[in-house]
Amino acid sequence: MSETKTNPPGFLKSSLLKWLGVPISMTDGSFWSAWAEHSFTGKRVTVNSALQLATVWACVRLISETIATLPIGFYERMPDGSRRSATEHPVYDLLHSQPNADMTAVQFWEAIIASMLLWGNAYVEKARSGKRLVALNFLNPARMSKRRLTDGSMEYKYRDLDGTTRIVLETDMVNIPAFSLDGVNGLTPMSYGANVFGAAIATDEASAKVFTTGMRAAGFLQVAGALKKEQRDDLRSSVSRFSAGGVDAGSVMVLENDTKYNQLSMNPGDSQMLESRNFNVEEMCRWFRVPPFMVGHAANSTNWGTGIEQQMIGFLTFSLRPWLTRVEQAIRKSVLLPEERAKYFAEFSIEGLLRADSAARADYLAKMTQNGLMTRNEGRAYDNRPPMAGGDELTVQSNLVPLNMLGKITSTAGAAKSAVLDWLGLNKTGETDET
Image 1 (spheres, rainbow, N blue to C red):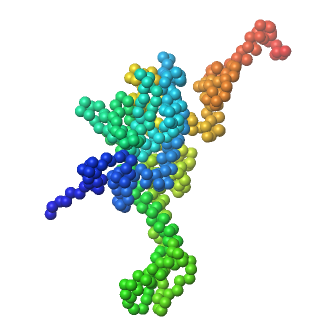
Image 2: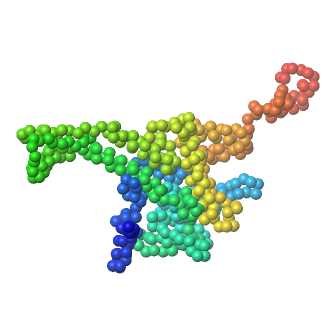
């Protein structure tokens, strides 16, 4: 038996177009759809088809929007081990406010995280004026190709909207791969998760068809005797007018002679459609490491920790933190100059999540100021309030006293009072009336 080698339709079509001299554009959806990942269900999975699933849409939006709205700071390490905000550095404004002429910082970071979630890679082109970095331009990963050259460097080819291809040098590129096996090329979730997303697409289509037919299965007609093909077709056409979606649906159907109509019953629960849809939601949440309750799936909402609060902590620790660290280190590696990497660094402020929780925000500031970790004015600046006189000193609570100091005067006010009484000579006479 000889083995037959088959080529994908995209390969055959591209060969024919090349022979005819017809260029293939990166925006040619009908051509590139042939390269979509196929699942066991036969459904083709692409980024666009996956985003039509409510769970994928919700997970990608949740992670990308949450990270994009976190404050990102750019700092300088000081000799004493502290840090200060490096607002005068050109990278500060690019990361914190506006990376390029078309995007705000929120839009930029949202696109970066979404690219890694859907394509497995994010690409940013550095634009310079002389030696000064002036912009960080987002590049669509669907239009990017790359390869390792013989000298060890990476070559990036990007196809612009007008169809022209240009090469971006490695020194001008910021490549942020997601989960990767070689540290350079991020694995594409749409490829490795094609079976999970394809099953969800097939289930959604099956569910839609059930509602299209009015949640009623088809029936069959029973007649006495045999019918000719023309008679069967005519009878089937007449009855289909009264079925769900027909022009006479809901009207009275008249059957001639001994014809009997038998309705087939189907319970959506018996076909386990609801259970399948719930399972698909949980499967897709596993791919994005999102607790199901955060995308509106209430079933088994306490299977991670002891409650919603613990799930929120788990989401921050195991879902968001890896993405934040990945971006922070990519900024150090590809945005900063080699001589700047030991001095400057970028960091997301996770405390930005407290802006939606006034009680937690107040408790955080109270503990920081009362324990000498933050001055009152630093706390006011954190809450976008102007500084106050006398608020630049670190303060601590004085109710915690060492055991060997019990019974002794430790407060500043008490020490001042003791000094005045001693100066007046009242303490020396042993008088108890301090007036």
